[in-house]
Image (tube, rainbow, N blue to C red; front, side, top):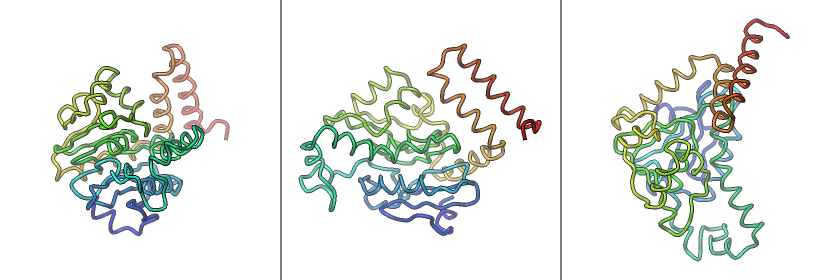
Length: 267
């Protein structure tokens, strides 16, 4: 998959993010291995733009990264008084109004929200370090396939901050409140075996098999009818918020739509 991504003409290629599309599969690649794919507001805007640039034909989106690390998290330059060129520093943001600060964080979060859209299934292919914002970006995807050298860590609390890039909701949903609290509050590493055992990863494979494993998973997802996958995803995504009876009702309504569609009723 790595060579395939580079052989395709990019739909987007800027600020450490490259988007390519091959039929029903899109690949979003983090392209700054020299900095271990450290993240910045510019990268987040590029990720948001990638989501908005997806053609309607895309059913599966693969998120991957060049180099030995998926993403080492937020670029530490953000914590300097100078910040990034052309960007307000985090110190400047902290001095702004509550509304301005909230709006800025909400803009950053947009880069992490579109991966769970109902019309796509997203897969994160994760190797090496996935720390802080890198961990949260992997958590933003529906599914995660990890290399056996993966090292997840949520370091925000250790820095006096909190995870604020949409990672807390999926983390608790995957591993439960107690383990999520322990992972975040201690900032410790979660390695491949634990990630697979606790549900953080759907599959852990040797590093040289990562692209092939993700490709096989993408192909399996594409083998099912698109509308059935969309309906199933919606059912599962909403299951935790619904009561048992509400979920039964949602299943009936969804199945009725599928049966009518398959029978051509209402056309």
